[in-house]
Image 1 (cartoon, helix red, strand yellow):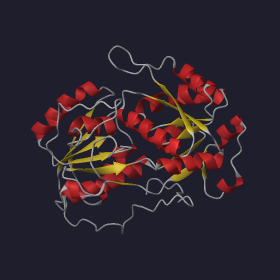
Image 2 (cartoon, one colour):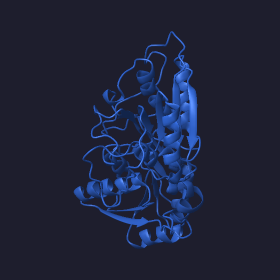
Image 3 (cartoon, helix red, strand yellow):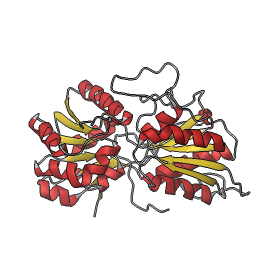
Image 4 (cartoon, helix red, strand yellow):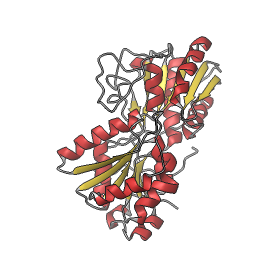
Length: 345
């Protein structure tokens, strides 16, 4: 397997195992060539590589129709129209904004005021999504197990309770800070869910939203000031949500600003951990793609209806600590974490 990193199941978090292996599913005997569309938000990632790798390992050699939004959601209606003309067997969509924009919300979904849904376009083929943090709360599917929509997929973020427990195990806190892009549906949903969970725990969430320009795009210029505002408001940790905008600016701006203030950072995704966060509870993007490939195989080979294929996550997550950041911050990991955590080199 490409990602040979040691993975763990954190004691008490209830995260069952999912692995890719030669005996996990039946091997394909016949080479088939379905037509598969791929729509990405910020270019190729390990998700698409894992997706293609899994299908290839199963003897499936698709004809790929690949499109990238280059972070510009205004391109999506044209891409959807082009795919509908090309009539793929299924489409892989990357992230909440792309998925929700391509399929719309399910009937009866009532979004929070922060969540914006474009109902102008629809893919008319089965959809497998990946890198969606909260597929039910964001309006993509009404439930995880079965739905009447021709949609299934893989979400990639650990349960919020598990993430918060990992933070508390490292250093207890009463106030958590979160910076996010309000133009991303995924982030608005995460904000709402995180606030609810923390309130139930008797803790406080402080938030700062990226400023938007006249066209509705987030502006990165004052992100350090946003981080400082969170620190000044009493935040003891900076929570980095599954947010593409924050992810782009995490390594050079957001995380350095936080650490310069002595504010430790928690990564909810592999991208954010790689950007230099102190600690994260994450799963591999490559394996997310492989799992999405497994679901695609059920559609193109077994001819299963996508809505009957459960939406799932890789319930094996790695607790990762960056020892260099711990040293700079003067926050030595607790001894009990040394036996379970992976230390980033």
